[in-house]
Length: 457
Image 1 (cartoon, helix red, strand yellow):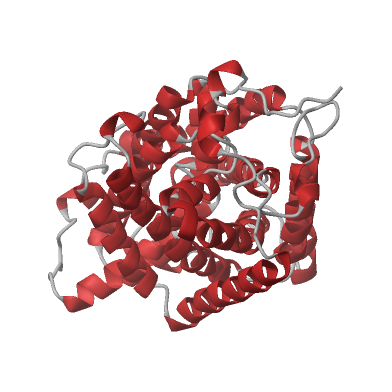
Image 2: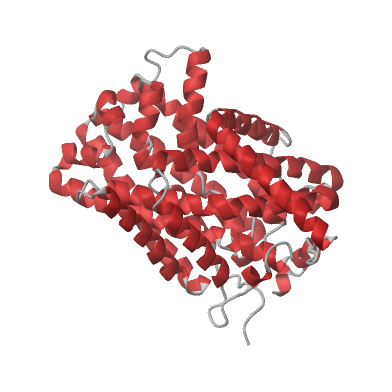
């Protein structure tokens, strides 16, 4: 007989590893040049600091919600509970609706970045690059087609690659003796004006993308051991470690390469390693970067595959997505569908557009939506209801909403319009479905009851 519930097998170490390999994908290696170009000076480091600050305060929102509702699907549950009986249904539906578009786009962007960076080792034609990116998605689905305990072990193995490449970059700069130079000149030419604020906004779109994933553990809430403690801990551990590594990496590269060279490079880290250790070392470093990029696709696909499953199990999505594999106990239909869409996108879209589109689609419903939902939840519930409480509430929530709005404005008009169209299409789909169903069955499963039964699963 197959199990009907997910198994809690992911430890704090494994949860932190899953978060970090999602965060450190191809992003920090391919956006560094864009950030330097946009900010045009050593103060490009401020874009990485801004991304870290937003991650911390938004991580507080995720921690309160994730520890209180440790179930598969993450934001699906947070929106449903936060907005209550009247608005929880449409908000959670809109999240699942956009997830079926943006989740494959996240997976595809990492696969495209993988293929792009592979060009440093072997020159690929445009067709060959598409074949590589598609093959990466297929291989990820194959690796994830197994039980969660095995996946947790694979995640830790892939996580090691993050520290190998980051350690190499940082130690290499320290050995060359110029490490503090970018810090000394961080404010050279800096003018606190509207132009700087606009440039920081555009650059932060890319750095924030590189931090995304600190919350991945929330999508796996139904599979985390001791979730009330380990979900918040894994997020803040991940953010602290990755913030440190990103800043050290950027300082290291800027201490060896000129800002002009960084801004013009498509393979900035590989070229950096080439300068400090030679061409053979650069090829090895590129291979490790590809390993890290592959790990990111692995982690992102794992987390997102649980969202349609959670919605379907709750009666809010097509019931076929609620199926678990009869022997391996994972949502295989959800994994296969998202993987298939990601495969198509990986051979159809461009990386720069994918990165911006990902943020634009997610900010309004997911990040801002669940922050507002948390404020509403606080009005209805007592302090004892929450398993983890953020300091200085509600200041972090308000700051997070304000910064997300500014980042959304910085994604440019085309992407903002696209995000609005997707939301509008989701609203229409929800209304049509509600009309023909008469009563849309979002409350088929009672989340509060599920929370109370966590200890008995």
